[in-house]
Amino acid sequence: MLSGIPALVITGRWNAEYERIAASLAEAGVDHRVIPTRDHRPQDDPAFAGLVQRFLRSLQ
Image 1: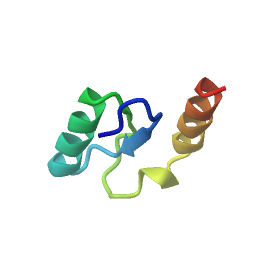
Image 2: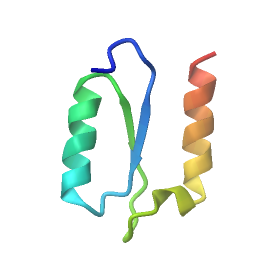
Image 3: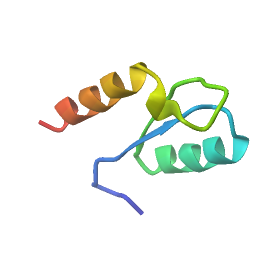
């Protein structure tokens, strides 16, 4: 599906369905990171920007 295309998926571990989807993508080579949260907005966590920055640096 995403073979050879760098991709990052960040989940919050609050929804089992999303975690299963992310795990499936990780098996295909996607970088899956988890920011544990109680809601559906891991992008609001301060750690989010750091994960994205590390991923982008890994592409250079």
